Amino acid sequence: MGPAIPPQPPACGCGWTARSKTSGHNGGDHVEGESGLFYHICPRCSRAVPAHVQEHYCLNDGERLLEACPRCGARFTSPYARFCGVCGLELAKVPENRRG
Image (tube, rainbow, N blue to C red; front, side, top):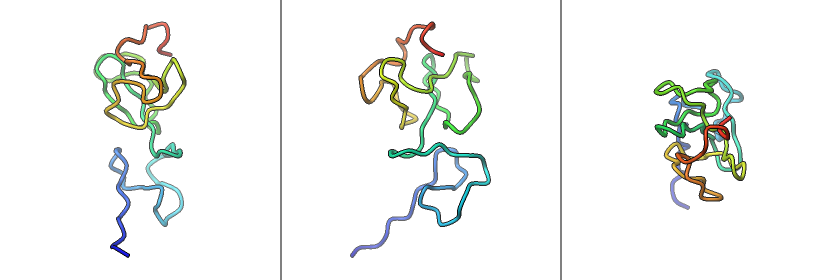
């Protein structure tokens, strides 16, 4: 067997991982799923925020953050998402009345 691959810290930089041997997380609750961390995405500037952060509006431009794809409901597993990974919806083209 090769060497074990160490767990990677989440994008928030707190150091907590799903494979950590410690229970809980002292920096807030991480939202975990089968694919790992989830993100909220700004449809205007594409700013990503880890889902455990309690922001609902983008700090850059005031847009309501997308918590999931408005077409299919899939949550975003990449902070670089510009399209929904399930149905292909372009996030920048989500009408304002479907953002929140």
